[in-house]
Image 1 (cartoon, each protein chain N blue to C red):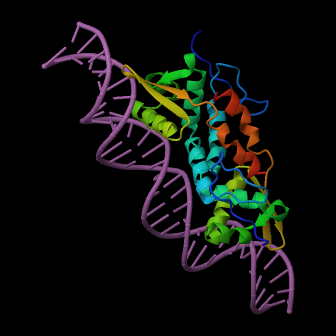
Image 2 (image 1 turned 90 degrees about the vertical axis):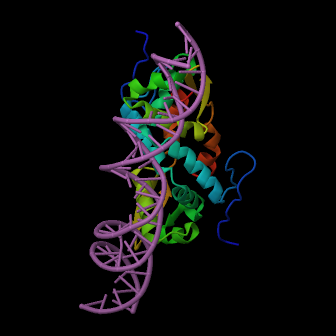
Image 3 (image 1 turned 30 degrees about the horizontal axis):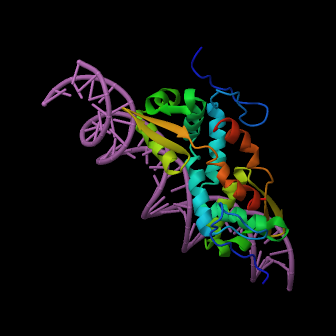
Length: 117
Length: 117
DNA sequence: ATTACATATCGACAGATGTCAATATGACGT
DNA sequence: ACGTCATATTGACATCTGTCGATATGTAAT
């Protein structure tokens, strides 16, 4: 067979490919979902703000001012980041504290090296 | 000063921050633009197809079938990838050959480590 | 219970995005 | 010059996205 083969959705790690193999559609969708969460400037800034915040965590009220967005909009962005697995949410009293998930992005590194290069 | 400071747009490399510094809005926008190019499953598959193709390059006609999209749509996606700097385009005869830019994504690694962690 | 405050959800809206069919552009062979 | 083929552009369309104001939900203090 001369055509490049399509990898089946990987079970070990994320999107690990043999050389010459093409990423599986399901893996492509998964990757795209992660990148989509990072595709908005405000969300990048929110991640950065949380990561550099005291104790590595921040609540919505800490974030609205620096990004100059309304409270509902920031809440909406945070929901996206949580659903993408890039951030965790912990309710403490009236506040919701968010933390960046370590290595959430690095987890996709295999794709970047084995698929893209 | 107790508040976290905002980094000015970095001139050396991409988005290098001192600890406790927040990414500059311009850098956030730049990063988001790159991630946006990667936020579509079809584009991820196109990148993978090109990278794994014979000689590391492919033309539009090689790509339409595997991704099951029309020629104009593939052309549109390729334009996005070129504009994001993730892929190069070289016209050779009637064909346009695309190649993945090595380290185009890795170039953003400083953000992933210095901003997100 | 009532009040105050932090966050989430809803409804609405403008603008962006992915897709295709039709057409234009451009390069080659005859 | 003409026809053919690969790619790009245009126009149209449905859907998704980011944003806000208004409102609902939930938690804690009084």
